[in-house]
Length: 231
Image (cartoon, rainbow, N blue to C red; front, top):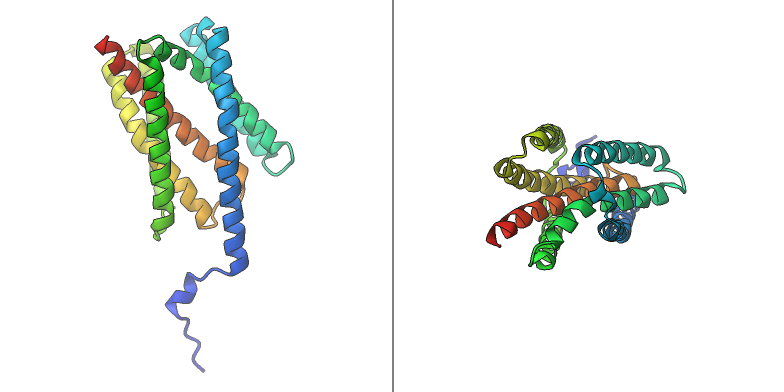
């Protein structure tokens, strides 16, 4: 009796499994789009009220790290419950609020509004490109995860160090590296959903959102610094 398995059957996915993966991906995209609303609202409130600008840089860093990790812990705990989505949206509002310091500084430039739109368009283009790649690439990208995580940790440490050094050249360098790392993270996270390795759309949304946030922030930092030099 021939018990050989055809190679193609190894990669075969049943219709029900494919439908579930598509559902998770679709919910991820919808929640990601929805998360932009509280982010923009938080940034707008932060700019108009000046709450983020009122904090010293040191206090702002502590609040950001404590708030971000606190929210991410809460999201992990509630990701399988009805409160998961509201907690995630609360987190994106907080992130928008913390982004308002940089947004306000860029808006203070003569071409500030156009620089913000350029950063937004650049972020959208990167997301579209990575989403397209995640549909085209067939190979398993799971091995990327540990390298990207190590790169992210090194970037975080260098960023905290530059908080004290205050080097514009280092900030631009770190921003360029961040764009590369978090663009790859978008591809990695979306591919995990498509391959069925990530089955919770709240967790998937959190990962992609953080990558988009960092890409936008890095582009805004680069445009803001180059724009201020031209004035």
